Image 1 (cartoon, rainbow, N blue to C red):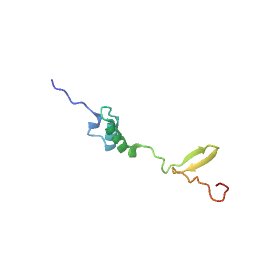
Image 2 (cartoon, rainbow, N blue to C red):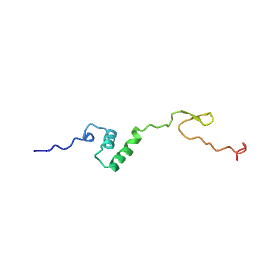
Image 3 (cartoon, rainbow, N blue to C red):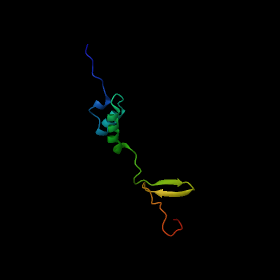
Image 4 (cartoon, one colour):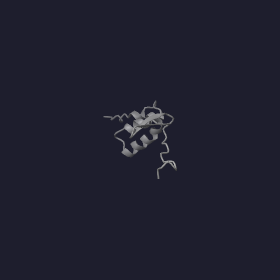
Length: 83
């Protein structure tokens, strides 16, 4: 009786590097450290980023604020009665 080796999706030769990393990330039989490394490797290619996208945020108090994905300088200006 010959046992066939287990079939793992990450062994598919047609996978792109990012697809490979995603398959490794989801392979529950692998150690968590390996899966986390795969997730870190894939993240820059699949994670949603806010760079260069305009966001609308309503701050407590109802003040609207627009940003390009970066945090604005919220320190009070000198001479405006704060500090």
